[in-house]
Amino acid sequence: MTHRLNLVLMLALVAAMLLSLVAGKVWVPFAAWHGDDPRWLIIMELRAPRTVLAALVGAALGLSGAAMQGYLRNPLADPGLFGVSSGAALGAVISLFFGYTAQVWLLPAFALTGAAVSMALLALLVGRSGSLIVFTLGGVILSSIAGSMTALAISLAPTPFATSQIVTWLMGALTDRSWDDVLLALPLIMVGGALLAMTARALDALTLGEAAARSMGVDPLRLQILIVVGVGICVGASVAAAGIIGFVGLMVPHLVRPFAGYRPSAVLLPSALGGALLLVVADSLVRAAPTVSELRLGIAMSMLGGPFFLALLLRMRRQLP
Image 1 (tube, one colour):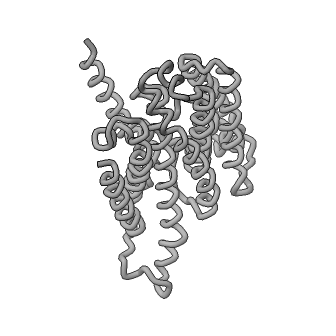
Image 2: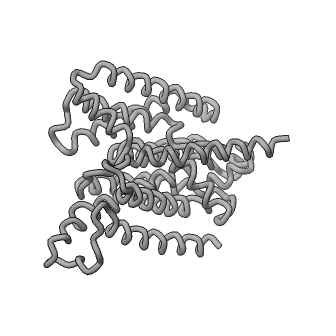
Image 3: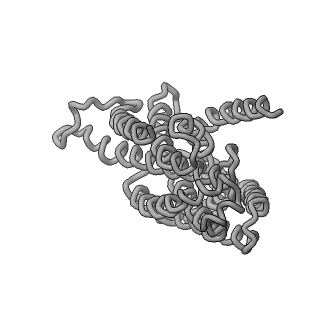
């Protein structure tokens, strides 16, 4: 059943990516897909990198969410819980605050540095205890600190232009992305995804409880390191490339779990494919929507994710005895 689901998601993703190349304020027909037509430049230089980046970011966030929910055994877990998203956002905000954006790679470099610092601080907070409670609380603390420092940077921004840049970037979007952004995100997301894939067996064992998982040969510290580093790299690369885009890691695992089964390992790949599909479709819709200016992708996902989170919370409440 899982193989069939993965095949369906792959085919749907390919179809959505092809449609994304066509869709926009100006629709480019398939007849223009050749080098002799000047509209081919719109496809290759504007829409193709944006579409590929949407698939990469969506896959990274969907996979990260599935891994986190399996590790924490909490269906409400989200990649932002680690504080990595907030740390990466703070790094990018610092680069915008001081005007370090002359080079294309400077803002992503600051964002990745912020994610790395958050990962290191989380590892120091948790130590060798491996406690899920300490782990979760540490992520919440880091998110709170990074969020307050980001708000401080916005309030103290040296110019209105810097404030506008910071706020716009924090909304999350794939506007004006190029192949350079794809080349930056692709290797990092591949490395992070490979690390999370290595946790599949351990996550399945963890569903039986920590004691049972230890008896089956699972090393909690190694698993924690793989989760922290894998999610950190995936989320850090995503934030560096597209800003903060929330709720993908929360929604997608829930959407695919009824079809993939309830083993954490069975949900990982479908969540990556589902995340890629969701973000490609969402980006196509915000680009083609008949609005004066393009709706930011991060705002659109928040408008979709907020009600989804509320419905999920209410359903879980009804299931309580």
